[in-house]
Amino acid sequence: MSTHPESQKTGVSVIGSVAELLAHSLAIETEAAERYACLADQMEVHNNPEVAKLFRKMAEIEAMHIDHVHQLSAGVELPHIPPWEYQWQDPESPEAPHDGDAHYLMTPYHAIELALRSEQRAADFFAAVAGSQTTEEVREMATRLAEEEREHVRLLEQWLARLPRPDEDWDEDLDPPNLPD
Amino acid sequence: MKPAESQTPLTFRDYASALKPVWCPGCGDFSVLSAITKALAELALRPEEIALVSGIGCAARIPAYVNAYGFHGVHGRALPLATGLKIARPELTVLVTGGDGDGFSIGGNHFLHACRRNVDLTYIVMDNQVYGMTKGQASPTTEPDWERGKLTPGGPQINPFQPLVIALASGANFIARASSSDPNGAARLLVEAIRHPGFSFVQVLSPCVTYRPEQRHWKKLVRPAPVEATDEPARAARRLLTDDSFNIGVLYRGHRKPYQLAMGSAGDNLTLIEEEFST
View 1 (cartoon, one colour):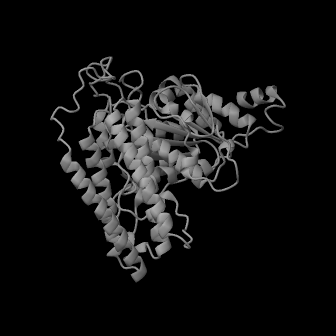
View 2: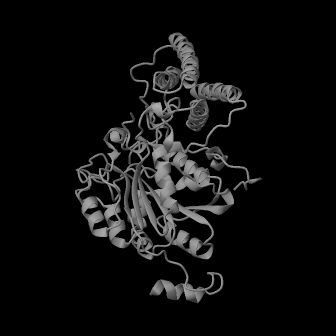
View 3: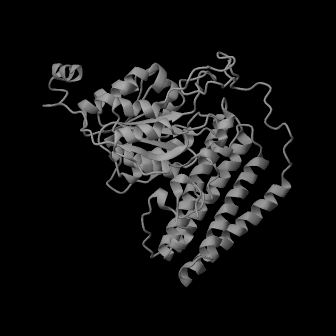
């Protein structure tokens, strides 16, 4: 059940067809790709090229996932679902990093951590669908999508393990762009 | 603006312009921009059917980031400009975007009369209770005890402006509150606001992560409004006066007839417009 005011849902069990599930999957990957591209733009604007490059890479990966969902959807007519009627728990699409978690001084470690959390949310969402009261076909497809997301989680965990942890004062800026008057 | 090349359905991505927003990473306005593009896609409006008008401020940059007609005007004057545009071009869907300082201080008087005139506009105010673009001064909606503004040591010490109450008292025909922490929910409210005839006012709680970082916690405070929207002004007034500013949803739906010219179009008779507005 959603706990957010504008996304009150009756639970993921209302996903009753593979077409509906694939429509959710397509929206999840599209929102993620858009959000990563937006974060890359933000980091470029704020002169954080290392993290910008990383977010751009994530956007490219998500674009490949969009292609993958299109392949899975071949021959299936996907329903149009208004954005506020998607059946995920969070007010935001599960795989999209939250806008509010970005910081202009964030490090590659933070960026991958952000991506890891997002992939985990997506895996949780599909796992919840797979465990819900729905058709066998939906459960099978949801199980497959959940496993794909778990694979992404494992890859990101490996990536994160190779990155240095940020210093305690990573967000300290001795020459901040926005000093209060 | 990039006109739509065909009549194929547009997605929210088609409403994003080529410009990259310069807001601080983490700013709530990114989500509001997303909500606006999603709402426009749901309404299936073509870019050439939409105009966004703004004044000055961080939030007022939105017209530049949307693929539609846009006018980035002067501080506080977005509403009269949008009013003129809608009267002259009634076929356009006109959205007005801005922040709390632009809308309730510099443009405060225009806000009252835009509500009163009830022209068919949708006014989206990204409220972060601070002047962000000018580096963190108290705004009309800042709490009396907010002490971090250097111009107001000890806090403003005056009661904050109550935009929803004022909108109701002034005659706004639709009043809602959204949160940037839920862009999809905000999109739903914007769709309803745009569809509702007359002047629609949507306050969006949109944190300023630079000067009001504590507002990141707003997402944990917002909740659905406990009751359905009413169409009775007296009942709405009671609710809004006792509201703690974190109830999200449609709070008032009125039935006033939107303002429109009695005859002819704006281009036909400027004197007629002046007479209409003076009554």
